[in-house]
Length: 56
Image (tube, rainbow, N blue to C red; front, side):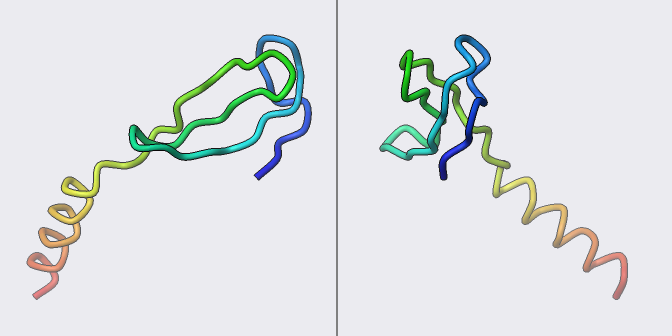
């Protein structure tokens, strides 16, 4: 995905990418990189199981 004028350093265009370490945004003009925080899947699944247990 391309995000126009989203770079906090140079106000350049950023695009999303993914590698073996996770997802990140990278500026096309200056090369600035920002990690994209991904939710912890284990915590989310435990919370869903606990909510399901409370309903039943």
